[in-house]
Picture 1: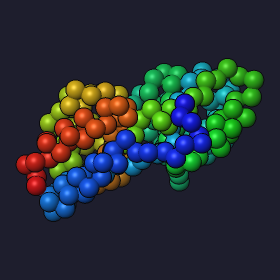
Picture 2: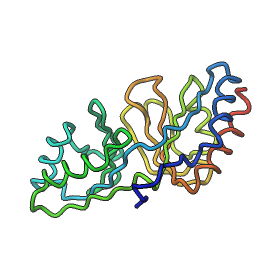
Picture 3: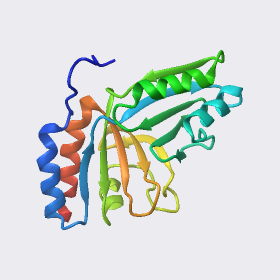
Picture 4: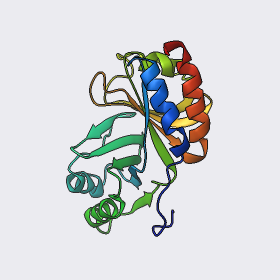
Length: 198
């Protein structure tokens, strides 16, 4: 867990201008940006136990029970990662409040709540060629019929393990949640793959 007394530093701070330059050069065909410091809480519990429903009520959004799906509320996104595993993604700085809400709702039920916010950063890829760009290095079928809004998957992109999320409406693009230590490499890969749109 990161030291809360230190000022957070984005793992892609030095790439911010390169991402913005590529977005401008593509004339909107692809848009690339980092969404730093999103709160990310790993959650494990019995999906058939009473805690699952109680946690969903406390968060204001039910835990998705269908594989590779996403549920959303106003300021929260919950990703299905496994039969008893979810990732709760919220606004920057919401870690403590989300952890407290989840633990209070679970009560005495067995639950694992882990702050993994410092583990990953998030890249946003949008634009009319976002799917084409990602298809250069992802083995998933990214066609909207197979991977449309509200879908997520743990996969590889450019040989990097990521969690890929199709945002909640057509045209909203994708979140790529990538380990901070691989974020620079993946950014370089995305910029290289985007060259044909610049």
